[in-house]
Structure formats: C-alpha cells, structure tokens
Image (cartoon, rainbow, N blue to C red):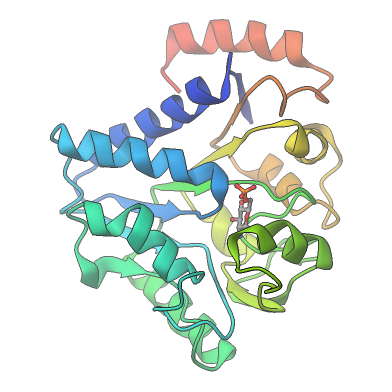
Length: 258
Ligand code: GLP
C-alpha cells in the first residue's frame, strides 16, 4: 500500500480528485468504481469543477459499491439519489453506463445482475473507497468473506447509527444492503482510499498496519497490488510507521506520481 500523509483534509481530497481526473483523461474508456458517504461529497464537488473546466466523462462507465435494500432509486436517501444529487446530474457520464445495485428488487437478483454487468464492462480501472468506522469497505461489514462477490449484507448497528445522520429524524437506515464483495472490489486495477478525521484513525491503523482479517475488511487491501491511501493528520494519528511513509513517499513521488 502506498500511504500518503496529507497536511489537511482539503489536500487529501484534492489529491484524490486529481487522481480520478487523471484516470479519466488518460484512459480511453475509463471504468470508475464509485463510493458514497460524507467523505466523498467534496470529491464529487471537485470532479464537477473539473468537468466545468473541460474534463469529460462521456467515455466513462461507473460502478457504485452499494445500495440499501428496500429503497427505490427515487428515495432521497438511496445511493441512487445520492449519486444523482452529488455527481451524475452535473456531469456528462452517460446514463446507460452508470451501474448501481438495485435496492428495490430481490437482493439476490440485484447482486447477480450487478456482477454480470461488472464482468461485461469491467474490470474497474480505478476504485474509490471510503472506510467505515469499523473498517468496512462498501458495506462489507466485519466478518465478511475476504473473497466475497456482490451480495446482500446485514448492516451492523454501529453502521446504521453512523449513517442515521443522513436520514430523517427518528428514521433509521435499512437493515441490509446489496454491496460489491471484497473479492469484487479487489479485481480493480487500482484502488484509492480516502479517510478523514479522528473517527477513522483506528480503522485506518487496522486496515493499513493490522493483520489481514475479516474482522477489518479494509485490511484485505494489503493484498492488492496497487492501493493508495490518502489521509489527513487526524485519520493518520494511530499509525505507527508515519516517518517511514513520509520517507518512502519522498522517494516514490520523485519516481512516479501517485
Ligand atoms: C457508508 C458507505 C461506505 C463509506 C462509509 C463511510 O457506510 N457504504 O462506502 O465508506 O459510509 O462514510 P463517511 O464518509 O460518511 O464516513
């Protein structure tokens, strides 16, 4: 894993935006793996800005990690709505090439259809990932098989409570989601992880420096050949090898951009 310690959340976000924009402009038919969550909102704002400055997504295909089971696309808290609001409604990525698991059909069928689309249009060139407080990626909660494909996963109480802030008062997120599996995520050619804030520090340390274990799904990324993790100082605060990451990055960045 390449660990990039940024001076602030704004710098980490801007570097991720730049990395995605480079993949889009340098790949003839780029396939993007997209994520949701609060951390990603400024990433999409940055990509919309890049689009207004000339970056086109017209040749791109996108795959989103997950969707809540039971929410139709038009539900304001569905990830379909999130993506429309924060990204799709503002850029030229063709509607027919935006893939998200459906939340309003049988979860088994939704997952199977999503895997078929991934096989057909994949592999993903660049997968964007956030990290849950418990180390989840997508909605692969602790205990998820490290080789899993897209399927329905029950959400932990902690995840539902963390995401309740996006729902109305007294409303809770659904009990399960259809999510790309860890095995599906690992097929991406390259992966970027963006984690910001103190609340993510323990998950970051477990994913980057802990043992590879289903207890922390993000730790599976240690097996991926091209993963870069972008952190602000708070999210990096539980790491033990920070001096080494700085030295390594000084050498790597002189040789090849991230
Ligand atoms: C949700 C998403 C994850 C995301 C996580 C963190 O659970 N399924 O893909 O990484 O939220 O979200 P936030 O950025 O809001 O902390």
